[in-house]
Length: 307
Image 1 (cartoon, rainbow, N blue to C red):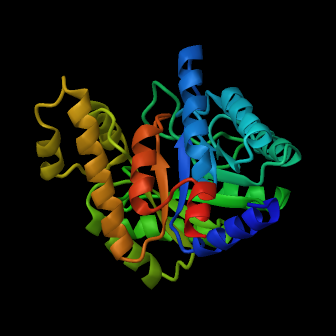
Image 2: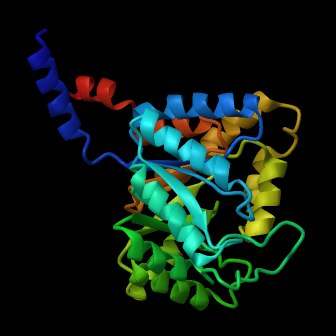
């Protein structure tokens, strides 16, 4: 087959893939060399799925800022992926945060996940920096003053633990969208009906931006429970029952975890959801398997098959 014919075949195949679901992946900065190797192996494994972007978190209190910057710029320059650093309001004045954003723009980074951020370790109450951005809506406005970033923000189908009411969650999200955010990524959840009801309430509130479900493949159930407790996500009894007795059976846990997440994304697809954000915890296996079930597969190979 000639090169030109192969290009035409791939191009035709890609055209047929335009309706496939859109995915993105979240990673976190590794703490040591072994974890860094796992991170890059995971990035390499997931890259052929052509995600919309891959995001890299801050530490809860912004403590991993340098490592986040290093990973994001390396992803952007060396992989061909769209890298999206998390940027928070915690622990820095406004101009310092905007300087970070300017540096990202200078390094070719066009997508930022703008967050309020969690209280510093050892504290339980969030207190804005006296010279900083108070909340994510203020950060979004600041980023818009720097450059035309593609901005994602966070939202909670089950209200944020600090939200006084579900209505406040909606009001806060609408303010962030109105300030210039392009989409909202949800905290993870396991009850699909909670997301669908939240999406309906967003639409009724006049929020037109995409509400992207955050999907957490369960690698370790006790770890997930701790995360859920911190962020206010409920864990259904049926889910606990599925993982009961598997503490020492990693192989079965992985099979159950994949089945649970595949059921979740396929149910969401039935209700018109076509974009998903995966909290990978720096592991590729489960996210890759779930994407495969969604029909999100290595683009060149799938395009050739479709041609």
